[in-house]
Image (tube, rainbow, N blue to C red):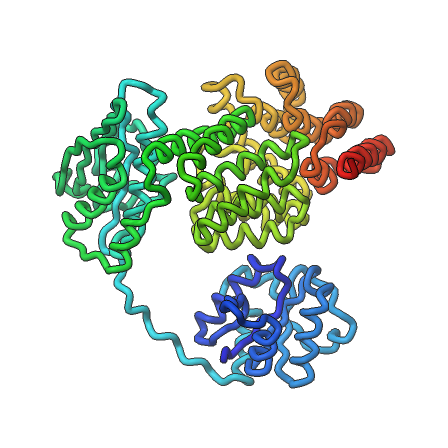
Length: 576
C-alpha cells in the first residue's frame, strides 16, 4: 500500500515525475505509474490502490480536467476526505472542485524548498503523519571515472571511421554496465576526437580519473585493436594490450577489453554485470559491421541518407532477423522518409513493432514506436512511448528528440524545449533539435530567446554546411534560423541554394515554407506549401495541421483549400 496515490493525465507525465520524486524524497511512498503484472486486471489494481492510499493528489492541468478518469478518482477521494489537489498552468478547475483548496505549483520550479511545495507537504503530514526519512543508499558510489576517447581509425580508409566509432561506443556502453565505474558520456568523450591535448588535461575537463585511448585497424576479415588505460593524474599507463583477431571474434574481443579494464582497476563485477557484459544484440559479425555503417548514415541526419539506411538495415535483418537495433533504426529512417513521401504507414509501424517485440528493454525500439505514432498524428501515444525510451536510457538522443516533437504536436512548448535542449546537449553535431528549440520559443512568443537559440543553431549548421555543402536538411533549417534572426537577404539566398540543390525534397520545401511564413512572406509561403501539400503523406499532413510556424497563414482561404484537397486525395487513395 502506498501513502499517496497520484491521479494525473498521462500527457502530463514529465511534469508529474519531478513532483513524485520530491514526495518520495520526503519519505512517503507514492503510487503513480503502475507496472501491471501479466494477467493482472488494470481496473482492479487501480481500485485497490485508490482504496488503500492514505491521500490522493490530483494534478489539475488543462489536459487532466477533461479526463473523466481523473475527475472520477478525484471525486472518490473527495468523498473519503483524502483529496489534496494541486494545479499547473492556472488550469480552470472542474466546477464541482472549485470550493476545494488547491495548491498552485506553477512557481515551485521543482524546488522542494519552495513555499508552495512545503505547504503541500504540511497538509499531507496532517493526514499521513510526518514521514520517516529514507535510509541512505547502501550502494557504493562509483570510485573510478573513465573517459573513453574515440578510437583512432588506422585502416587507411576514412570510410572505415564508422567501424572505429562503433567499437568505441560499444565499449562505453559495456563499461557503463559496471556499477563501480562512472563513465563520461559519449557526447563529451567524442568532443575530444582528434584533440591534441594531453590525457591530464582531458581528465581535468571531464573529471575522469582514467582515460582509455585506442585504435582500430580493419583489413578484410581481420581486425587489430590496441587499447591503453591511462591514469590522468600522472599520465602513467595502468593497462595496455594489442589484439589481433578475426572479425567474427569481435564480440568476444569487446568482452575481453571491458573485463581487462575492470581487472586493471581492481574492481569486482557483480554476477548480473558479468552477464550483462556478455549480452550482445547480435552474434553475426557481418550484420554488426553493416549495422554500424547504417547507424553512421542515420546520425548524419541528411534526408538523402534515409533510403541508404533502410537498404542497409533490410540486408542486416536478412543476415540476423532477430537484430532488434537494426529493426529500430530501419523504423526511424522510414519515419524520416514517411514525413515527406507518400508511403504506407506500415513501412514505419512494422519495423517498429518488430524492434519492440525483439527488444522490449531497448530504448531505440520504444523511440521507433513513438515515431510510428507521430507519423499517424497520434502525439499522445507517441509521447508516452518516447518517455518509456527515456526511462530506459536517459542519454538517448532520438528518444528526447521524439518526446520534444510529440510535445510540439500537442502545443506543450515548455516541455518540448526541455526535451530538445537535452537532445542538443547529447549530440554535439545535432542541429535539428536545436532548430526545434527556436520554433518552440517562437510559438511561445518569446522572440528574444528564440533569437538566442537560433544563433546557437546557426553556428552548428554553418559548421556542417562548410564540410557538406549539399546537406539539404541543414540548409533548409538554416533558412528558418536566418529568418528568426532577421537576416532576410541571406535567408532568401539560402532558399535559392536549397531549391537548386534538392528540388524534389518535399521536407526541404516544407521547411522553406515555414521560414517564409516566419518572415511574413505569406504569398511565397503558401505557394511553396501548396506544392508540398499536393504530395504530402498522412504524416506530413498531420504535422502541417499542428505546426505553429504556419499559424500566420492558417487563416488564409488558400490554406484551407490546399489542406482540404490533400485530405481528399489521401481519402481516395485509402478507399482504392
